[in-house]
Length: 175
Picture 1 (cartoon, one colour):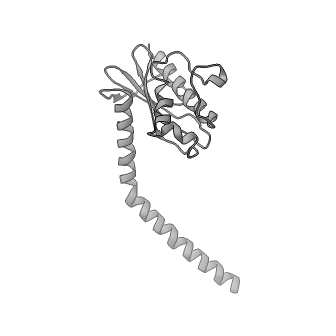
Picture 2 (cartoon, rainbow, N blue to C red):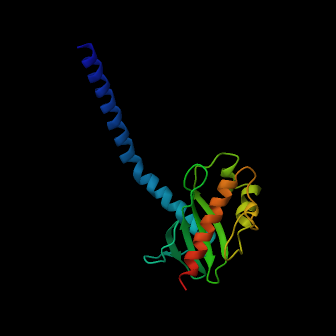
Picture 3 (cartoon, rainbow, N blue to C red):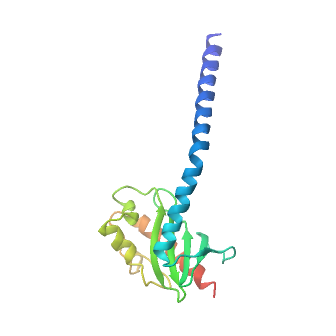
């Protein structure tokens, strides 16, 4: 009888907490969706001056989730796997197949290491800036490429290179 009472008490507490979390989620979901949409639009503007419109049809390339077409090129949303989880980033590619810029929208990389890739610091800006003008295929110097990896964050650096390569391949396949 005692165990049954404990189980029912635990069930009641769990049900109340679950209902409270569902209520909070329903209240905050629209604000979170709006914030994510704004971050995406800001990223598009950053990597593709003048912005772009979402394309319904684009070449299927691993890691590419969305493509936005503008007057000067494309903003390609890619999701490579980083050290901790997926990195969501926008890569601007001009009509000649050269990188215009990179913006990291969302990540959970280690603070002070992989997170530097998205930081608004000189180190983060230098890391992202080295991709501007790149074409073909990019890789970190450790893998025989020309891109400097972030110190202590080779996996994140490789993930960013994989995302850039996916974006370049997608745009190249558009013709």
